[in-house]
Length: 489
Length: 89
Image 1 (cartoon, one colour):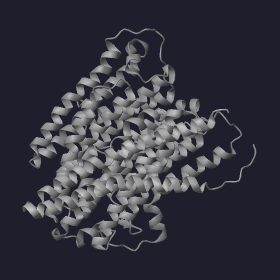
Image 2 (cartoon, rainbow over the protein chains, first blue to last red; image 1 turned 45 degrees about the vertical axis):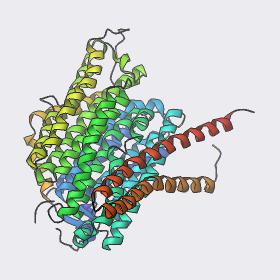
Image 3 (tube, each protein chain N blue to C red; image 1 turned 90 degrees about the vertical axis):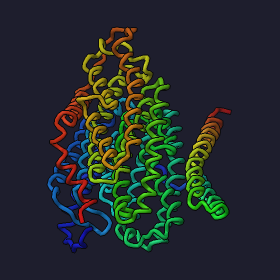
Image 4 (cartoon, helix red, strand yellow; image 1 turned 120 degrees about the vertical axis):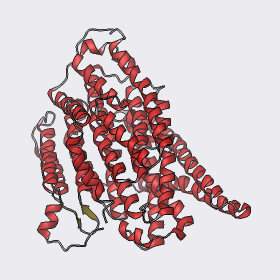
């Protein structure tokens, strides 16, 4: 698929410039934080983080059009660049939404923003990883940062407990995924994804099957798919709310990028029909169970963070529909839905953070009468919930349309039908929040103010929801270019 | 602020390694057991790969459930023991 170019040091640095800029920005934040004379108030920290993200985004855009290998374990191609762009924009919204919350709850603000930037670096590496060792290292890099961020409020027992649970569960799954990767290496003598594809044959099916299950376990854990979803509700509820926003989106972007690259490169359905059929069958079952389970359990939740946790489990099930389609349209649909999901879910969480900053509650009943206390906030939250449910003209609708049509193109009518039924089911629990906001009378008339940074986060998110929903053609050609790399040649 | 010499708590490090290995086994063993048993039954009844696939899938579902239950009980025990340590005598 790729040539093996000999790159000069300058070219290598250029191709890795988004990652290097993120690393530099993270280190600058740590350094400035350490020498800053002001111990409590550091409003410039998120600004420095945003400058780092913006610089990395510009570097990523400037690399558009490249399709080459870097350091033998990474690829700088349109797919990797698209994943980086989505991750960078998503992290920008997370940082904007974190400002007030982190200043109010933690003394260690510099470390928080540096960790967010390093986690973006890990996602960028995962987007371009073409070698199982690189995949594992970047996965662990992202996981360890996620564990630390989940337990960031050290004095909060729930945050600590959630972090320990997440860490122990993640350690077990990580061990199993590494075991599965070692099977692949043992059977093929390669850790490079293209090398694995060259060495695999259908005769290896009985021994590849457990390896596939073990590696899929790691991926399913990262995207929060059933049956590796149990960590998600506890971690989402216990983590600081900006971290919950991060957990609900960023590991999913990384997880789906890796799933697509590993499965479509190492086990391509066109070259390895039997093995390709095996992983598609496995993921079809996981997709159907994940969306159904997530939606059914979400219906019983009374805490908005737990509800959004189960909603995000269901969303992972929808996105898997695009993966199992294993076609150019399917990959385009996954990327489109990831972009739509990122702006939508982060918009919803930004609204939850704005509410939580002032009221200090995540219970749905406390959202009663929100439309009178904060009309703009209520409207944005509802737009995001409608987008998550897949109601037009929002980004969620266009994303689901593409996912389901990709499944239909591949003859997966039953899976698309389960997706549609689940979308209808999901309306019931999003309606529960909308009912509280608009139809339940408020107990108090106290207004809820939103900080300027949060207002920008909400504005960016809702703009993204409508741009992707009404003008998807603006990004579709870029997404199609990104998806083509798995199907050309 | 008093300076503290950073030190590695080897007991904690080994505990964590042990937990990771134990957790990994909890997922891997049911899958491998399902596959092995399925393979035996498939050979006996000439149904390859049907029973192998079904039992491997069941192993894949049972493993994470066992792991989660174990994680919850371990964390509960650990939080309780930490609380006991912090209680004034």
